[in-house]
Length: 440
Image (cartoon, rainbow, N blue to C red; front, side, top):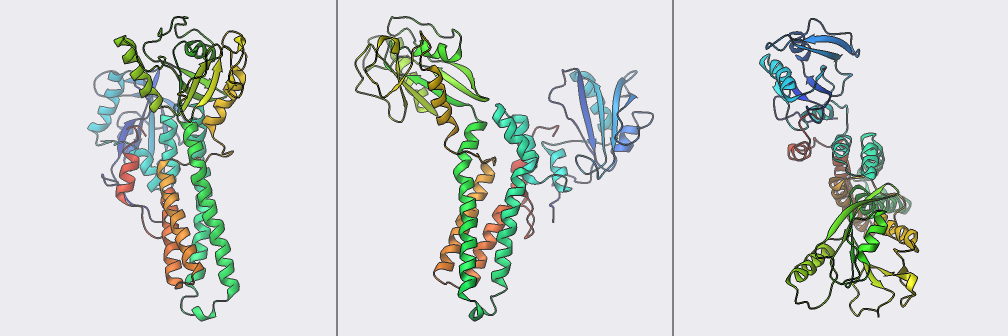
């Protein structure tokens, strides 16, 4: 497999801080490249044996030095595939900065965003989607996002995609083998090719169909509680959170601005928003502004809970595509087909949470763990497979069918970076690794 070389001095030795912030208890300074050992040995008396964490005094030229732990990992059995040395020094921006500066004075270059991970990709230690999984793990904001990122890093997506890419490549090779003698192609061959194409296209389409569920799990969906004034929105907001977060009053128009808070349901993190009551006209300029902000929140919501109380007549302007909830069910019901809840007694709250989870998770039982770039490449592969199938159906020249299969194969290969038909472009790699933090 051909790997592209990094655009920025690929044979140089780089240094960077591998831990998130320099103000914790310990910071890890990572050095990677052909002269990693030489540069670090200039600061310590000797390196420990490979893959042994040992105590050493690190001299930085400005004082007595820092008491640190040092690990030496010769390539290719290291994270980057190169010689790597890690110095576990005491944290603090000044202390860490002095160690990094001492290594730079000896010739190490400051690592760029994601450059350690990019070198791991270039040396075959990680596939491209695994590298992206590392960035996703660092950026994860929900428990589901962490789980999906770990699956990416473990190579689950790569194995799935590579299996399909290999099958598409085998089919392309078989069809190409018949290009010189198309008259010898039997009906049975065409039927078998058609069946294989149908299965491959269906597999790719299934990924696209379940991508949205994976995306919803990775992101914190905004759930907006909306409805007319005095519908019990703030009371339901507090009941869902299990604590008093919004002011509750029988006076209409008490909520003048939206209030939001985080809510976790079965490991899925949501942002729940309580909004000002909606009505057509008001002389109160502050309430009018609050209504405008409520409409903005509704427009940006993934889920809207439209709330109306059991002690009021049904509204004529129910928000479309919303979960319809009747509040104050302890007072009776006028909307029996709606989800009924009572913030006072707790009636219906469990059922509402279940319905909310169902909407947020979607109907897909197995969310696809791919990121947006992976979805785009899979979509392009599905289109090429669909085109190849249409060409085969109308008995077009086999060259055209093989060409479309080649397109599909390349798009799938770009997900993992394992493209046997040519290297992944520098523009693609640049966009991916520029989103990483410096220490990765």
